[in-house]
Image (tube, rainbow, N blue to C red; front, side, top):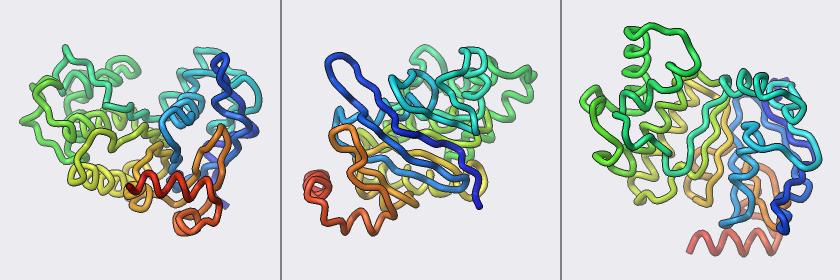
Length: 247
């Protein structure tokens, strides 16, 4: 039986006066990609931030690598986060730093690697996302949207994560670049990091990368299951969401 990497048990979270999550539960197994879908403001990103320990649940439990993270100190959380790679919406690159410095940043912060080793790992990770050494000196403003996403993924890979957390990885991209990012996420599973949670409203991305899909509506998972089963659901709220996103 595959190891459980992330488990959420009846998780609640509100930001007064709004209840964002109202009893969310799921388990993510090693080697699995779970796609969480939902409309804007549905709580998808909140769920991802809870898993990363960036915020804490009001009720319920989140276990990551078999640790109940809401009970951990900030120091222990930091150790746990080093086992995760977080790909932020919009890539969230540092505008004042070059591509090289952006990808090297986690290595400088969290490791004692020498400069030669850092450079080797930066170049390798950029290569994994399809970028060559010619981009090392560029600033984020000089990159296309698709390239920024790739650099963001390369930075997340710097810590050699055991699970990747993607927040809207195709958001703001044209269909061609969105498809390329989906292909990249699939390729990473083959040998770099085989476990992921992907938050998105992109149905095509869900079809391309998901083992299972959860649809978040009104703070709860209206459905959770294999891609085909979710797309063929008879739940009217899920059907309405999927039809709206498809349009």
